[in-house]
Amino acid sequence: MKSLSLKDTLDHLPGSLFITDRESRVLYASAALEQRTGFSVAEIVGKKPGQLWGGKMEKTFYRELWQTIGTERRAFVGLVNNRKKSGARRDEHIFIVPICNRLGETEYFAEIHPDLAGRTAEEAFGREFLRRTETMIQDRDFFTWIIESLQKKKDGTLVRLDQSLWYGGFHDAAQFFRETLVTPMEQVFARRKDDALLITHAQENPEKFAALYQKYVVSIGAYFSRRLHGDSAVAEDLTQEVFVRAFRYLPGFRMTNASYYTYLLRLAHNILVNHFRTLHRQVMSYQHDGEMENFVAKSDHSGEDDMVTLLKTLGEKEKAIMLLKYRDGLKAKEIAALVGKSENAVKLILSRTRKRLKKNLQ
Image 1 (cartoon, rainbow, N blue to C red):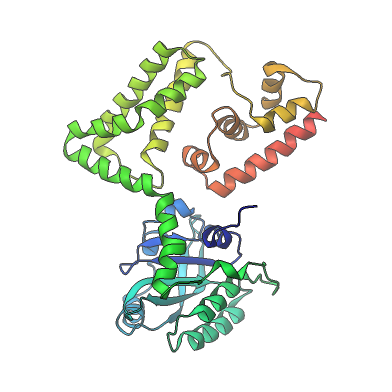
Image 2: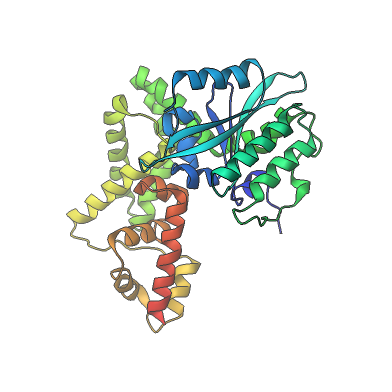
């Protein structure tokens, strides 16, 4: 079995960690930060905390913060009032430490937030955090302590990890974070970064929209072709309609938390739905993957009509997400961007809906 990377492993821990550059722009965020803030990792990366959940304190607070972590290169503990994506506000402690290279220069800042049970536990961790970071010796023992802090649940139990995953063979803390967390996260969002540059160029010079067209025309064409049973003429027409609309909307387009491909998929999906409505097609044909085939195999039902009947028992939200997954073959992250939900919320809906369908098939 392939071992998990440190990045993947941290996503299974109850405590959260995020890393920023020296301008406080987030370069890496663990999955637990979504539970803490309500914002998905895709929404967080590339933004500053103050643009999402923070930025609500007095100016004197931020002067002290930056004096401590920036000028003095010391760890900082403070009590802040943050806003979750839902709008709910809460007081919580933040624990920030500068991450330095072998020359002692700050390259990153890390905000560590264990899964703590209340204010007293936060205050106790804050004292220990300042004691551990007082010398700023950022060696294996230091990072072992940080990750073990993120492993702990509120009840004190630990999520077990393979300690060989971290800090082996790195020259300094900055290199450790860069190679195990920052660079892998950049690779995840590389397409979004590349798209942002292409979009900026196209907005400055519309003729350069051709680069976006060439990058995605084959993929969008394949999207239509698979759903139109190889009707290449219609697929080509609908593909062109996607890019006509995209070009029309280009001046006002702003990159959010998804790649431009996801945006084009959203346009394509809407255009395809309108196409079938025009043809008075109420149900789009779909392809089963192994999991959906198992649903059918476990019952006396057979054929697409029976599966459509089962899908009609679902609510509109659940049905849409199931079709995007099992008919359109999209990943949970892509579905999340299309339906405006977090990736974890989509996975939860898929899991619950599969259980409902299996129960109906019994």
